[in-house]
Image 1 (cartoon, helix red, strand yellow):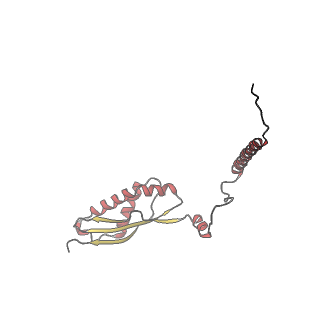
Image 2 (spheres, rainbow, N blue to C red):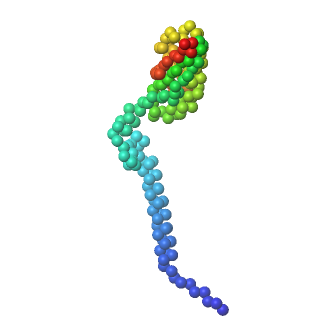
Image 3 (cartoon, rainbow, N blue to C red):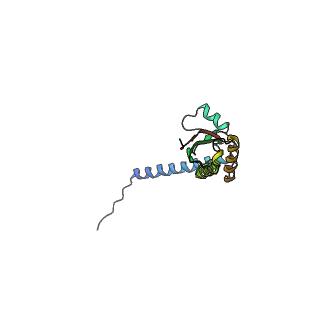
Length: 167
């Protein structure tokens, strides 16, 4: 017959109790954090932040963080008189409105198409003398008609140049 010898090994019992204590401490910590989160006001400042946060970053968030959307890039629009219009369009938007910012990014192609179709529909004799304010208002109306989650208040033209191919 063979005898089975069982050793009382305290080291495995110590490891087991240590892991059990750590799991218990984590459960208690999670419960306390959950209770603290439920009791705390929604408008309360953060308890702690990771990394450095400068005063200018805090001011930008409090002032609604207005940025300029220039995602359309430089447009090259062929005009009716076989010349080309180079145009960049920009407009301010609130970066804190995440859904509107995402919609703007999703509508870049639509904005380019709207702008191109507007300028290509101008008669050839009016291309050099179009009213910039009237054009901005019409493009603004068309842009806002395609938006669902917000509105653009104003447009800015930069890099506006007509290149005549007849020369």
